[in-house]
Image (cartoon, rainbow, N blue to C red):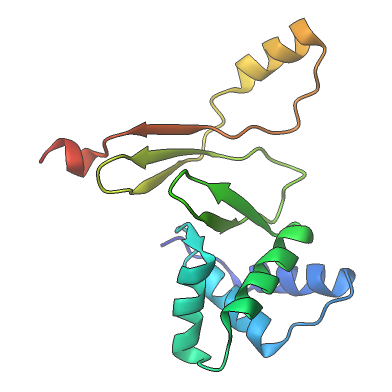
Amino acid sequence: MKVISMTTMDILKEKLRETGFKITPQRRAIIDILLKHNTEHLSSEQIYDLVRVDCPEIGLATVYRTMQLLDEIGVISKLNLDDGCIRYELSLNKDECHNHHHLICKNCSKIIEVQEDLLESIENKIQEIYKFDIIDHDVKFYGLCEDCKQQ
């Protein structure tokens, strides 16, 4: 698991304050789960199950609303990994970086993040040829992970 400093929580709190929202205990519990599981791609239902351990009174609707709010203020990214549910990951600097790529194992459904932006030269070519300003891209590769290949 990647270590995220408490400054990440401070950034999230500040973004909420800037947009006129408060850090309620429920929002804090949801954000804590996102921080603790920052390398995973959790669905709302998975977040709900994890939050309920420490915050049993929280409702699934609260999780849905909070995830929608966090998406609207630009601190998370929605991921559609073609498995029937929307997944989320922290994305504090949407304006400064592209999405990373995802490798999805067709056997075990493991999701591996590729941090390098391997498409920069393709983007430059597209922008040059088509005079099209690319803001972002979303790439998913499907195959077999190292563990499943060895089975």
